[in-house]
Amino acid sequence: MTILKAIIDQFLPEWAGGQRLISGASLGTLAAQLYSVQDNIVAHPGGGQAGATPLTAAFCDVTVVASTNDSVLLPYAIPGNSFNVSNSSANGAQIWARPSNPHNGGTADVIMNQGSNTPLTNVGFNPGYVGNFYCTKPGVWRKDI
Image 1 (cartoon, rainbow, N blue to C red):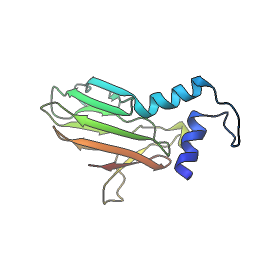
Image 2 (image 1 turned 60 degrees about the vertical axis):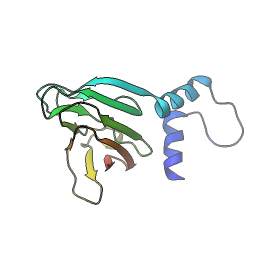
Image 3 (image 1 turned 45 degrees about the vertical axis):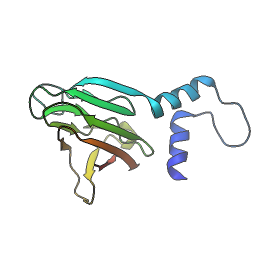
Image 4 (image 1 turned 30 degrees about the horizontal axis):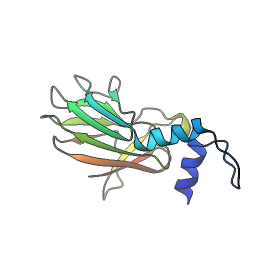
């Protein structure tokens, strides 16, 4: 229930429970986030967090990784957010967490690999992989591959 509340609070701010109308714009924003697609993503050449290509949709397909370790950047880690990322290129990429998250007091986001509690700023993403990144705690992405 907490995750659902976080999603509702983020995308339907006028919702306070009970019966009432919710604006079509707010519902459209929610639907766009839940079902959006970002295709033909070009990872930032040379890699690194500073210039990493932002992932902005619920389903992202990285199709161009010119050199191993070119980079992409996850959205802010806000509880309830979930993103699916695929690497359709021939090279491995690096996926970076945000260096500062205003929704978490300005601290850096981190990524936790499945089965680990070691916070990382970035993770490798091999060609052909499809992964799910989800957030249940502010500032923390969990990676499920």
